[in-house]
Length: 99
Image 1 (cartoon, rainbow, N blue to C red):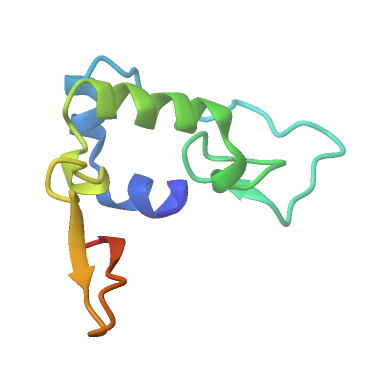
Image 2 (cartoon, helix red, strand yellow):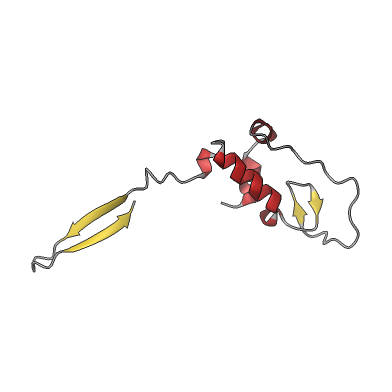
């Protein structure tokens, strides 16, 4: 899932509760920045939200603090299932599949 989609689904309260300080929008736009690219996390132009390293770090911190469980795969639930496939020849094959 993209960082932008995660940002859209989490609230500022989630960020604050996890100790991530909301960032202020810059007081002035910098000269020479690409106005076609916009970061929704910083509320400024110059790069896209999915490339924002601060947002990546904030999401990682929220994951570590257990705030974004809905975005993390649960490896315990995604255990491997081993199937025994027989073709009747006596040369059975074991196939591991993720469920």
